[in-house]
Length: 70
Image (cartoon, rainbow, N blue to C red; front, side, top):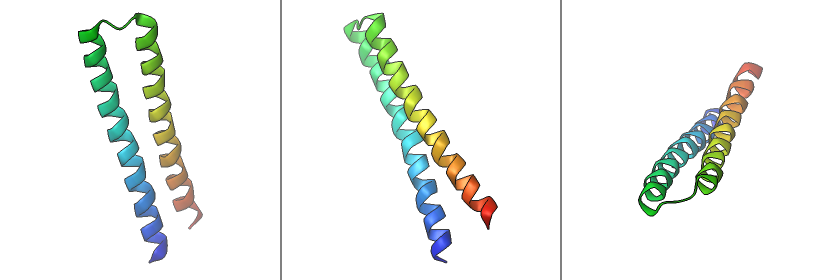
């Protein structure tokens, strides 16, 4: 049963990373549009969001890899 709990924790973590990254990206985009951020700064925030989504993908890959081992 502890194996299921570990998978559940990893899944929740991946979900929180995805949700948090999405909320961060939307808020920064809206704030940047309102405040007139430069395109370079917007690009930096876009890359930060991309990194967050790639990290979430890596977490999901780890969950999948662990489940294939059982």
